[in-house]
Length: 454
Image (cartoon, rainbow, N blue to C red; front, side, top):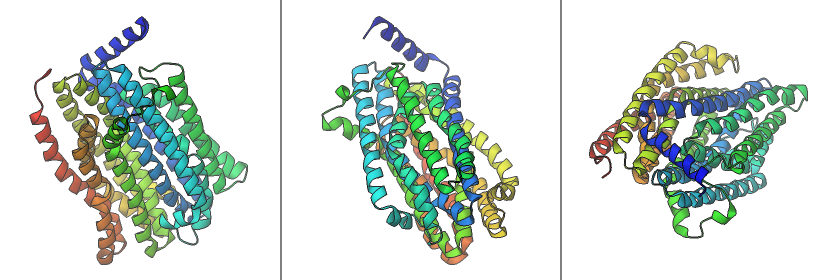
């Protein structure tokens, strides 16, 4: 390691282990919050512009969201799995090992994206039907989904690059890459859909181009050697233990996003009985909820590298302080945003479509969701904590509870008794249940943490 690189590594180590915890989490979390906010705004922009085409086209965005969840599932698995190890290794000053995890995670995600793209393009129609598409929605879902599949390698690999930067404590650089792609997507959507009259193909093309632009920007950070870890084919670990450790640590992310994708399929399948309006309405609720989530809990993304780095450096008191700060901040902020959203729920849904059935179902579902979103930070922060420090089993359990293990059976059973209301209350009840399990697990773990240095 050169003298300049060594000095930079020492400076980063002091920053991550000596800066007051609350200020450090906010400093790292705010850029990530901005990135998540812009990403979710452009997802909502996609839904908004596509919904101008027709009701069936608007329903297609909810269907294709399932594909994006699948891609994110594998991207986050490799990204969080590699990033958690990288942060702890940098905290322990083992940079060579960090390079192996960075390179192995990146190239594994790229290969995974290529495989999903190939399989998806060969089986597009069956995939769309599996995700819950009706006959009227299928032509739109097919056209939109193909472009998302073409962007698959960029989406999975970008997840890894983004998470490595975050776990190194360089969230601002990650923000630039993700935000640029998101803003570009919002600008290209109306141009391609209406200006070039490409319809829903225009929305898909805009998303694909934006994803590759984000990937190029994130890659340039590593090529310019602005990171401690290095990505190169020569650093790919040949031993099976490295990829196993990445997968095991990232498994909660795969479970979370994978179950989100399955949950979307189940949701669309159950909503299908109530028509295209119900599918579209619940899709709009999902996008709005994601936006609230990104604003309210984006700070939690700043907590992950702080927890991992300080756990690796044996600064356990900072892990404990960071957990309680993030939980308190997330719950308070989420409560304020949810209250505002509750008051304006029908108006928010009507921004997408103004049909009375869409606004009625979507407005009611969004209000129920807002009441229960207060419980979401408990399970999310607990999962972030356990995954960041390498405790994959409790992280996996909590991820599954939060993302579908409770929701899926509720979504199948409750509509039989309560009709469309059963669909509306399934996810909120799942959040409440996961919070009841997460809180005692978190308290018990934090109480067992040793003194610093032990």
